[in-house]
Amino acid sequence: METAIKIESLGKIYRGVKGKRVEALKNLNLEILKGEVFGFLGPNGAGKSTTIRLLTGLISPSSGRFSIGGSNGSLMNCKKMVGYLPENPSFYDYLTGEEYLSFVGNTFDMKGESIISESERLLTLLDLHGARKRPIRSYSKGMVQRLGLAQCLIHDPEILILDEPMSGLDPLGRILVRDIILNLKARGKCVFMSTHILHDIEVICDRVGIIVRGELRHLESIQDIMTRGIKGYRIIFNSLSDRVVDRLRTVGERIGSEKGTLSYYVAKGNMQSLLAEASTDKVTVIQLIEPIRRGLDELFEEVTRGN
Amino acid sequence: MLRCRNLFPNQAFGIAKVTLTGGRRDKVFITLIFISVISFLAVIPAASSLSMRQVREVAVNLSLSTISFVSLVLTVFFGVHLIYRDMEQRFVHAVLPLPISRGSYLIGKFLGLSAILAIGLTILSLFSSIGILIASATYKSQIPMLWENYVAAVFFEYLELLILASFAVFFSSFSTTVFLPLFSTVSVYIIGNVTQSVAEYIASPYGQKLPRFSIYISKAVYYIFPNLTAFDLKAKAIYSLRMSFSDLSFIFLYAVLYILIILSASLLVFRRREIA
Ligand SMILES: Nc1ncnc2c1ncn2[C@@H]1O[C@H](COP(=O)(O)OP(=O)(O)OP(=O)(O)O)[C@@H](O)[C@H]1O
Ligand SMILES: [Mg+2]
Image (cartoon, rainbow over all chains, first blue to last red; front, side, top):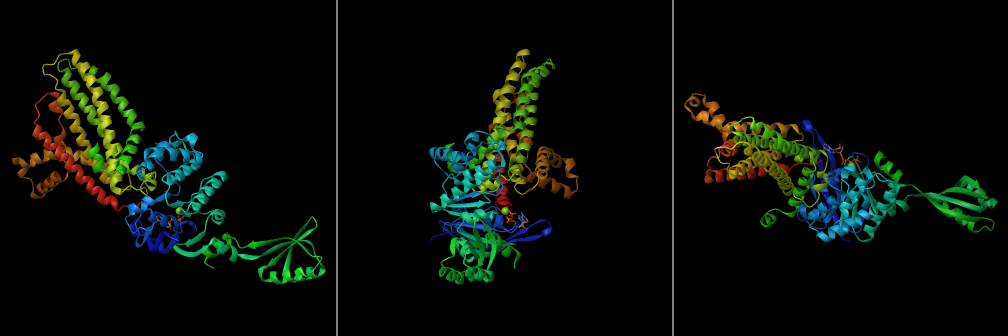
């Protein structure tokens, strides 16, 4: 697959007042593919927004380089391919939502008619149609966030860079944004997003990177995390023979019983032998086997705490 | 307009348009213009008729002074907020990642401010003309009213303000506070208005007796800061004096050149500015 965003030993040192230096990003190497949704995770102040601000040209790197859309061209060429949503966005608040979208479409040299039709479509999709003629000053936090998504989608970019796209949204809004992102992925777009909501990452992303104090500590596909993360299984039995119960006493752990069923937890390593035992048995009936995973939250904690 | 479109990218015009819209909807702008219009229509004709004799001259003088003052306030107010507000309210975080170069942004901002001031000055001069006509009707003046002088006075006032606006942009291009651009821009206005008198004094026999050091300093100030006195055509408008076309052309070119230099300097600084 083609590379959408390529980051090579990118670093950023902020120079604050009195010459205080903050090394916000250290030697980041990352390659994100077309059609991939990449989740950027990390505790507060880890350097996520710094990375994103570097990619959008708001700040300039102290070291390293990056390219967007395979072009080693100018920053301007990169910017044309990207739809960007800043964290806690804020837009010219004396304009109406509709006026802002038309301003954005115009900077991408879009045609008048397509600006009108696209902004109409996005305003409806993001449930802002009723507010389109009101000044942005009167919008709620979540409405501004939705407008932020509309303004980064209006020119149908190949690459989306979203800094906490779900923040400030109500549950329905989140589902909507999740569906929008999944739709973008289905259309082969590349999405680079930072978030603090691990559940969203599990559902939306193909791959996660975890950054801690400016260093990329972990990089893995969600699928690998999910399969590697299986710790054991929950088994619900309709009926059990004494032989299997004995066996379960040593390899498993009883976790509950209800409506004539019994449930046990069995660690991953013991599963094979238990199933072999149970399959030769006529009395034992298994209703359900459910994998128990080490979730993303545990991985996050482990990586962040640094073992 | 067509030639301008080739000169500046579409993006600069987008920023200019947004800036102009912001200005038009600004309460300070609306209030100031409204109060001035009232004073042109009511206060100035009434006040100038008190002078009994030179009613029209006084009306022109009062009108031009009011225009100067109001437009100076507008320029300083909008000038220092032009970029500061975008930074402070973090509008730039959403705007600069769009395919807008730093140069287009800065030029667009300046063009937007120029348009706000042009609209303000047009409204002010239209209503002040009505005020002058009302005042002239009460007492016939011996000197004929030269409207082209009046228009020229307002236009050169505009050029002076654009120079000031370019300084406001320059100071905002690196400042993180609103105070530095505010005080610096006002200082440029004051220095720009006295620098010619100082230069004349130094050239006079009295001035030659000053210590060499202060002569050099004054000369440096004279060459670095804009000479804003040149843009004051009030006397010519009040007394309907003849104006030299070549002088005016020279002043016009001086303004354009000055603005270009200051904006280029602003761009050099703003290009490297970190927006975090
Ligand atoms: N303009 C700045 N000057 C100095 N230090 C800064 C500046 N901006 C950010 N930092 C520092 O850089 C580090 C990384 O900040 P960044 O905003 O990238 O974090 P983040 O991962 O986005 O955090 P969050 O989850 O809270 O959004 C922090 O320690 C922060 O204090
Ligand atoms: Mg952040």
